Length: 255
Image (cartoon, rainbow, N blue to C red; front, side, top):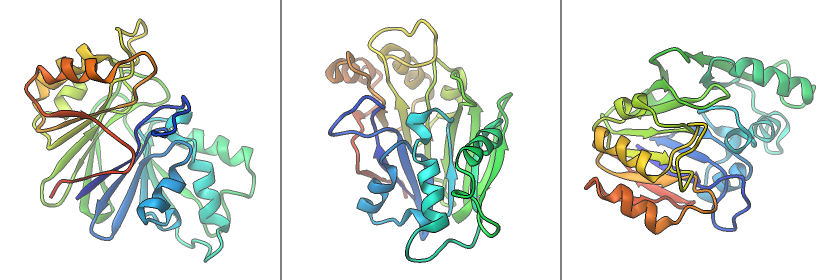
């Protein structure tokens, strides 16, 4: 299994990092995870035709995580080179189906047709849930401390390799539980100081989660202006776990 970091930034314009977007690659299967603006281009740069994706998984439906959903479905619906005939499966938190329905209402006839559309499977926001994805990937989820149906996501390959993506979240015991002992934890580290709304993480909060979970490796994403990279790495690095800031285009092979 490979975990490809397509976008490791925020919606704040950045020449080096785009909004959140990731790819789980298992053999010939490709599963998109989130997908803010620019994800389709970054997929193409990696060599994956977005119209041929096997599935999508969304941590939540804020624009920096799903801004390319309507363009993606539009490309699948009418893209030159062959209109997609099979439905596109999506997994997201409870309420994602309603959100998609509003997108379809906003773009009538453009992202759904008689022979193509996205089919949503909703996951619990009240407790643990799971699903089996294409390629034999197991998805396990926990509710995150955020809005817009937010979830923590854990992907396990048929060989047992594991990666957890935090999604957007405040301090979360559920994230530490889900990430316990995983091969890779990809976590937001958005703020320089404690978030008064407890909806994002800061370096000390990330360090607490890492200390509890003890993953084998940590990548930090979703830095907002004002958070110094060196400070974040120093604070989280005190846990004794290898940590680095993620970058767009990074590919992690997990076995």
